[in-house]
Image 1 (cartoon, rainbow, N blue to C red):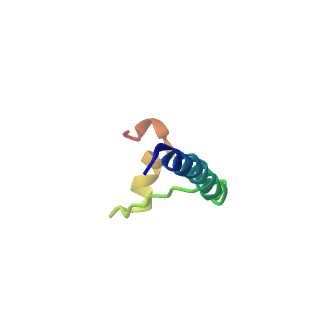
Image 2: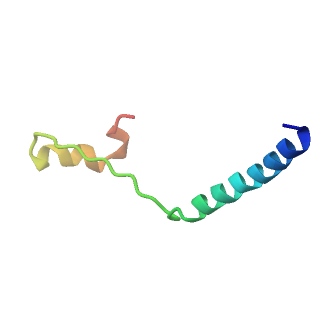
Length: 59
């Protein structure tokens, strides 16, 4: 292969990859949601004081 055909392939491939990337990004939802849950074996009355005060939450 000579340099000109290889250069032509590269100059076509790079914009194609960029356009495909832009299309994929544009098709993604504008927002997303992350949820976590945990089952704690304790009555709600024992948990409420801890859940109600953010300062008691551990990071």
